[in-house]
Image (cartoon, rainbow, N blue to C red):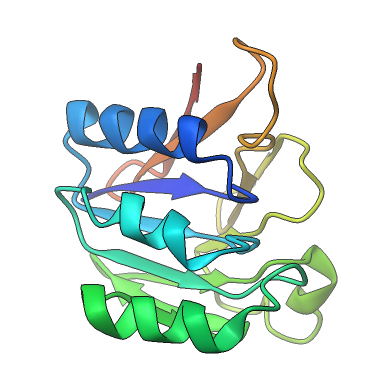
Length: 160
């Protein structure tokens, strides 16, 4: 199973349209948003994904009522962090701020976060911690999403 990872879209709809096209072109099975969507219209664009969307709320997701209505409308799965998933026999934790990992990293094969807008990949034999970094910026070529293969635990960075 291949999952797309995106964070901190901050309502940059132009970039979100590119993100949807990239995930659809890469044929990911599921997409995880690690928070800071900001506004419901971002979720309306993410509804064009060919894969189901899961995610957590971030510190800039203050329009909760509108976000939650869009999540229900589009059939997405979101939660306050941490979101715990079990896919392809891998345990996954999703948070926004990496400080939210505290007390929850044990036995998690994959730990995903956003918030810092910085690329992070730490891998050991037992765990991968990944943040694809910036994707809401205005500089072409410096925005990125991630693709994680849960079979091999490889992480690919896709810049746009």
